[in-house]
Amino acid sequence: MDPLDNSNIAKEKRKAIIILLYFILIFSYCILSVILYTSPIRYSLENRISDYKFIRTYPWYPPWRLAFISLAYWLISVILYSFEVKEAIYMLWIFSILFLIFHTISLLNYPKKTVLYPLVYLVVSDSGFYDLHLDLAQVTLLVTVIASKPWRKIKLFHK
Image (cartoon, rainbow, N blue to C red):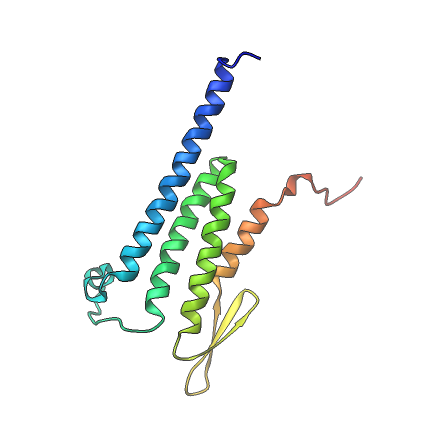
């Protein structure tokens, strides 16, 4: 096979572009995470766009910011994967796990009692009321597992 074949050159260019894209995504994620986590809360973007101006000093707030940026990058990875960039499955896994970690840390730092269940979590207020929430971090992990499984090869109905 000729190493200068156009199909080989196209494959190598695609591989190089994907590696560069991975590097840019992970590098920008790291930089943005450090900036968001270490920036003073009073200079946050949330204060500029929110009607409720107050300093957010909650213990769950810094991990929540990291969870939010992880979710945003997971959604970018979903878009790449939907354009049939099959290598984006690794990014789906990375950002899904990061989102799960930071989301769980923010829930564990929540001042109310929080109980984690499969796909949901329960927040118990001081007055005894229960508030059930869909755990988006577990949902993203489930979607990532489903996306990485070769479901097309499984025959559900045999003739």
